[in-house]
Length: 281
Length: 319
Image 1 (cartoon, one colour):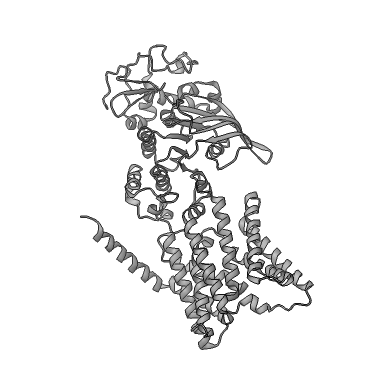
Image 2: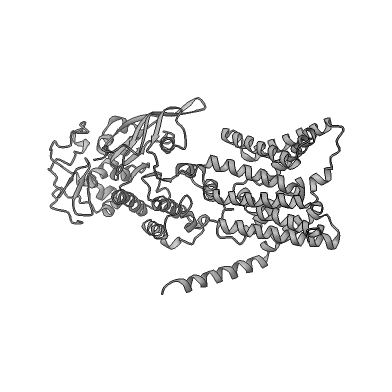
């Protein structure tokens, strides 16, 4: 089955969506929606460096994204600019440096379209292995730091005072994000990576009553978007990366529409009935 | 009775500088187990900064801040806004930084009067309800040290008194230390072992009576001091413990409460300034001025604390 390019694409997409869901929730909660964008822009610099030094592209992208994250953490500590301004600064600075660096390397030709929009239909078996091992590793680490990371998201000082070490978990979170960017760049591309992080999380917010629930729902929403998007791109011969994002958007719109309201009402009705049954009279 | 074991936290000559300005400087502060220490002071006097130094959230730029190793803290920050993008119920909020068992969490919610809101979303709570939820969360952690930064802001007046009573009760039951920040002078005075009056530095500190009658405090708070002190004097220079004994402002505990037993301090307005903070056993008569007292000025604390206002008290009614 792995010899079928379409099946490989679905498998790779599911892996990315699975891990993008929970991380995307944190981006939404922390109002860092453009963090994925920033890291993705920095990815161009990573690609340039990889070509220059002739090292693995995924590794180079990871390193540059991680460095950008550290820069963000350091600048946030100084607290003279808001997070969105810092993200804009880092994002476009790294993009510009990447473009300038590529211009110097006249001997290389970069597939800019592939970089920007990804090429999910061209994933290899190795890519799938990288996505799934990397993705499961990210999820495992995220599970370990979940409570302190969430506490730090609600209030950093409170988390610090009660011994949750927010600095440490924020750092780990940034590294996890850099990992996800590096492994998913090939799938949806630099331009659309933010969409895979944010849109499923936004869809999940409509139905979630708790943070853990929202993370799981975001994963499912993303995975549904991958399957629907790939099938649609096959049926209508549209570019696969953008079609996945459109599918994610359709799910979001459905969640916001009366259909979503009905689901919320049914869910809360079932929940209330379950509670009444469970309670001793 | 505190001071026997090492303090939970201690600040020594601690100060914070931001942008070339000292927010607060030269603070000496200790909180021991079973002690309620209150920081008072005007806006910008460095109360919250001092608390954050004590918690280790801010590192002091000069001096030292030490905490007992393994100290378990419950913190109610002055400001906490929960983003609407966060799906967070009160029940999940209780487990934010730890796993209190369900019974403990339920008890804390009941104690703060919001047991019915367990399933409610945090963002739909009113200001006062959220304040209660934060307090409940901090209590349910069973902390060694509670740091409460304006814990009753936005809580209605009768609720305020009840919450201060609850804070004192937590200290009595759990024996934790409490660092309290407040500007509800009149109530705070009642619920405190030690008051530290801040205004960029420590103006004065000591028992509530000592501080309230000090000149520095009067300069800082002007006309409010009399009312605060009146209520304090008339209601809370002693506390009726659950077992019927009486705890006095000087920390001593007696079986009964008499106006001339030497535990009660004088109203400073009667020209008898009490400038001997440690000398609690000099006897003097206890001439309450009923007209100025809590009954007429602040009726609520009298009712809530059920502390007798009559000077001649034989036993305690609420024992």
